[in-house]
Structure formats: C-alpha cells, structure tokens
Image (cartoon, rainbow, N blue to C red; front, top):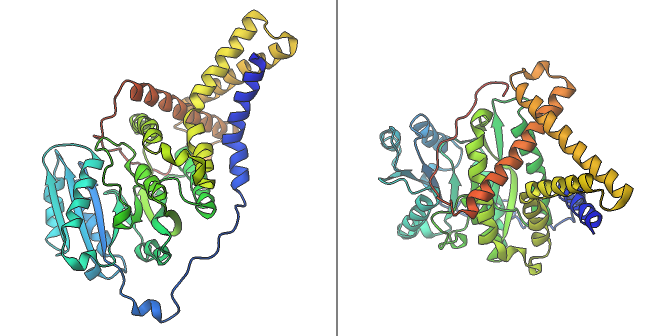
Length: 409
C-alpha cells in the first residue's frame, strides 16, 4: 500500500508539471471570434475605457504611469482614469494630483487607511457605477498597476476580443524588462504559454493584475476585501458567471522584473492568496465547467499542493528506508526518492550561492542550480503561505515589491 501511494504521488507530480503542459500543446481549435466587417468597425464608437489603478507608496512612478496611459493611441476623450491611493505614507497622492492637473479625465481618490488593493478596487468600481450615462454606454473596466507601462497599441488589442459577446474579460500579456537569465522571467514565460493554450481550450485561469479588462457586469461585487490575489479571483468569477476570460498576447504591458532578493515576502503572500482563492473559486472545480475545471485542477490546485506532496514523499521514503517495509523493490524506490531530494536541495543551495554570477558567465551547471533554487524557494513559500492561511493570516494589505533594473539577477 505504501508503494502504491508513492507511485500515485509521483504520478501526480509528473502529471501536473509535465504531462498536463504536453496535453495542452495542441488544444482543440476554437472557431474565430466574430469581427465586424471592414468599415463597420470604424463606424461603431469605441467603448469608454475606465482604467482603475490601486496604488500604495508609488510616488516615484505614479505620474509617469498616468502620462503613459494618455500616450497610447486610444482616443483620449474615451479614457477615464481612476486612481485610488491606499493609505500611502509617501508622496503618491501629491504626485498623482499633479499629473491629474495635466489631464482632465483623471480622478484621484485618496483613502486615508491602508486596507488593501481589493478594498480600493471595490470602491473604484462603485464609483464607476455612479458616473454619468455616457460612461455606462459600452463602458469597459481596465485594471492595471502603478508600476506597469502600456505600449501605444495595447488598449486597442485589449478591447478587440470584446466583439464576441461570449467574452466577459480579456487578459493581456505581461513582459518583464531589465532582467536577462532571471529564473522568475523564465518561469513566467512558461506560465504565459500555458495561459495562451488554456484560453484557446476554454478560458484563462484568472487574470494578470498588470493588464486585464472586463465588462462592468462581470465584476464580482461581493469579492471579500481581504482577497489577496484579486486579479486571479476576479478573472475566475468571469468564467463562473458563464462568460470566457480570453488571453490576448497582442495587448502588452511592461514591468521591470522583480528583484529576486526581495521576492520571498511577495511569494509567501501570493501563496496565502492561492489557498484563499481555491476556496473562493471552488465552484469552478465542478465538472460542469468541463475543460476549464480540468485546467483549474491540473494547472493550479495540484501545483499548489506540490510542496505537500514532496514532503509526504520524503517522509514515506524515509520510513521505508529505516524499516525495510515493502521488500527490496520498494526500498530501492525509497532510496532513489531520498537521493533525489538530497540532490535537489544540494543544487538549490549551490544555486543560492551562485546568484551573483553574471548571466554571460553561467555554465549549464550554474543555470540548473539556479532553477533548482527558484523551484525550491517557490515551494517553500507556498508551504509557508499555506501555514499562514490555516492560521487565518489573510490580510489584504500589501507592501511594494522592489524591482530590478539590472541585466542579471
């Protein structure tokens, strides 16, 4: 029985990290989305876009972010920007108001208390509901971050899929700048490819807070204010409501890559949010969602429990090695598992020591060890987040994550 359990756990790991991505490689082709005939599209007024930004201590970049939105090629008279400052302790409010003075369609909502991003976004969406009638006519909500930059054509790409009435939301593509050989960007590239295939299969799993848009009636008004991964939950609720969340790679947002030395707290916070999101979005695990439920189980739920599976495998293997249970074949399998854990941890520790080696000077061994360090750190952060979530540590408040401008991390 112990041997069967070990094989089952190994199979789960192989499936979620290897087999599932391969199964997604060529998803069934979905019929092309309806596009208005040439000439008719130009005659239809472009929708009003209400861009929502929740900012905490972003004084260095908030003004540039506001200017960037109006530097896109989307008609400025059909853009409205709402900035909610979340109890900032720096000059974010002053800088945002200064930038708002140069653009008549920018409104600043300065909240005195730091409550968290979700609470700010809920208040901003309520503000949209109180706007004059023209804003309600074909209005779309665009969510983005204060440290993000849009390319000139980003907004046009972001709204194009909404020609299909089955589309309730669109998630754009986030590109990290300023980091070559960064393991976080390599992992993000893999996640981006999965997102593209899942969108073609059925719908995106959640959204990316840097760039996504939804129809106003698709916003989950009852989202708890302490929701940590708000973008994921909001995107999942679009699908739960019966519409699709489409991934549009042409809508590009750019950010500086996260500084790896400062990533631990962010990873743990996201880990807490992942387990919270699993409960908030549990309805999407029901078989009635078919491919979408399959993706949610395979890509998210099983991966979120990878650290638990690894620890259980190690515990079972150690028991077998110490007691000899199960006979020679089982003991040899347990020994291989213990050896594999040892090699993984050794490689991770070496990767941590070799973090400062420039990208151009890395050998294959160094790159492997750095990826091992990234994987182990990610699993440790998930487990830490799981423990904190079980203890009820689900505050929605946040801290700004430093970004790197170096060419190596």
